[in-house]
Image (cartoon, rainbow, N blue to C red; front, side, top):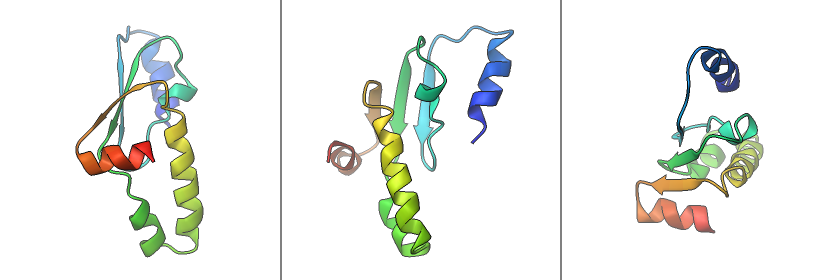
Length: 91
């Protein structure tokens, strides 16, 4: 949730060549705070069923936010673990 803060502090004394942004839960949202360095997005799973079944009706709102986050990565190279995750990202 505070990846952007840590990243800004880190960049003061270090160089960064690439960002690997992983979404096994909430993504780091690195496209919001980095526009020059390449970002590779790693999607382990989408998890939409988890939100809705565990936390209704809050889960419905969380799922909509989560789906919106993936739109931030549309210009990033993306790696997935499985064919089913790939299909979920495409649709």
